[in-house]
Structure formats: C-alpha cells, structure tokens
Length: 139
Length: 139
DNA sequence: ATGCGCCCTGTAGCAACTACAGGGTCAAGG
DNA sequence: CCTTGACCCTGTAGTTGCTACAGGGCGCAT
Image 1 (spheres, each protein chain N blue to C red):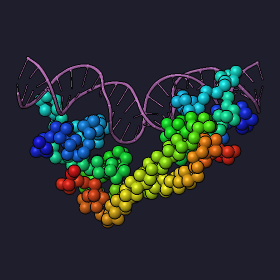
Image 2 (image 1 turned 180 degrees about the horizontal axis):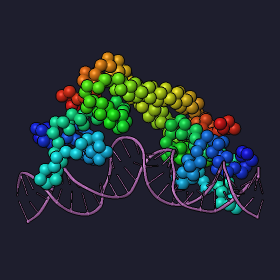
Image 3 (image 1 turned 90 degrees about the horizontal axis):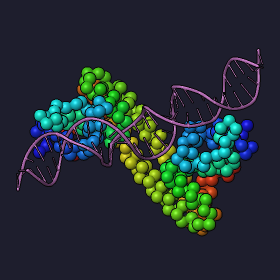
Image 4 (image 1 turned 30 degrees about the horizontal axis):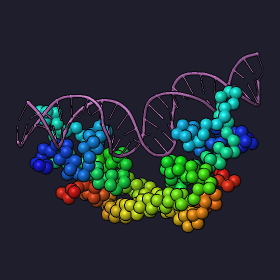
C-alpha cells in the first residue's frame, strides 16, 4: 500500500501524517513539486517527494514558518554551500522561540494571580473581572 | 483633547493604545457597540466605550481570544451572576497557555540540540539539515 | 479657498491551513 | 455488467485578528 515508489496522495498523507488538503496546498505554494499524474489524473508520488515532505513536516514541527522551510530546503538542495546560513536561520528561530517562551511565562504568572483571587461569589465582586476592567489606569 | 465624554475614534485609539482600524473592526464584529455619530458622520465615543475597549484590550493582552473576551464581557455585564463561569474560562485559558509553554520548552531544547551540533562546514554534512531530513524514520 | 490632518466605507491581504461543493476514477462484490 | 463506496480531482470560501490600502468626505487654520 505504501511507497513502492508510486504512492497516491492518500498514501503519502498517511506516510507523513499530513492531510491530503495540506499536501495539495504545499504543491500550490511551490513547496512540493507537482508530481506525475496517472491516466485518471491522480497524483503519483515517489520517494523523493516522501523525503521532501518529511523535511517540510519536521521543519514545521520545529516551528519554522513555511518561508523558513523553503529557505532551508533551498540550502539543503545546494549541498556544497556552507551551512552558515542554515545555522543563522536556526539561531534566529531559537531566539524567537525564547522570546515567545518568556512572554508566555509572564502571561501564565499573571493568569495564575488573577485566578487565585477568585472566590467565586457574584460577578459584582469577581476579582477576575476586576482585573480585566481598567479602573482609571488606562495607558 | 481626550475623553470629555465625547471622543473621536482617534482620541479613543490614543487613549487605549489601539489602532483606529482595530476599533472599527471591533465594532464590526460586535465587540464594541456602534457609537453615536456627529453631523459629519464621525463616530463619537463616551466613557462607557472607553471602559469597554479597555477591558477588551486587557483581555487580549492576557491572551484571551476575541470569543473568550466576548463571553467575559457578557458575564461582566450580568453583575449578579455567579462568577464560576468566569473562573472556568480563565482556568481553561491558563491550561491552554501552560500547554503551549511546555510545547515551546520542548521545542527550544530540540533547537538548541540541533544548533549545538553545527560545525558550519558544508551543507553536505550539516547536522541541522540532517536533523530535519527524515532518514528512514518517518512516522 | 486651499491645504492638511483626520474621518468615512469597502475591499483585499497575511499565515497556514481546513472544509466543503460538485464532480470523476477505481476496485470489489452481487 | 452494474453498482456501491472509497478514494481522487478542481475550485472556492472560511478561519483568527487584525493591517493596509483606495477613493472619497469633513473640519479647522491660514
């Protein structure tokens, strides 16, 4: 059923844990090259597509944007180039992730504060609503 | 120039650190009620709008979705209701934030691993590209 | 009266898909 | 041979939370 070097889109989807629609969409935005077609106009994928889609999915799992993945793919294709550029992209991405992490950490603290104060009485004296309401102190 | 109980949209935007377009958009999606209009068809806002928009912005800063903010606003308006529902929304949101936090933490670890191995030689033996490439182990 | 800054409506675009609608294809079972 | 059902095709619209115009009107100072 799987990649004997000629899979349908459904086979490829199953093999890479991707939805069929997402694969077609990657093709549309030129991340995945258009494959050959069968007599009945079905897409036919080979192992190269499998590898490439695997790369894309792994990059996405690591939180790279599609543009970053595109760039990484281009670099990976040019195998004799220095990998300094790859390193740069990855480091920039890590910095971004670390920024988001600290934002979220601060946010979680604030939420825990707000929730901790709720005695679950009536809304009229709910601490959460109060914390949301700007009592004069608007920036 | 500000909220003498009749601000233009620009005044309100400045007072709440929101863009004019965003305010119009909140009106369109029924988060902010449509205000009175001047003779020249300008929106005229009062202190109630100021308070409500402040609430919305604070909720957004805390990472609530617009739908959650909408729900919180509805609850806040009904001041004699128990605030259990408010607590539920806030706790669900905190759980979500904590889930994202742990995802991002794991991601940062993976990225640091991947980056740490890059000797910056040629792409042919780049550890980052290798880490992205699915070497047989496709799920 | 003319310039400038603000305001108006409406539409299109971003990321990264997802969810149809309205069809065609293929293999198996009756 | 024909039908059923699972899959495939294209194309369009929707999601979230805005942002960015385009093409015009309003208000005030000079």
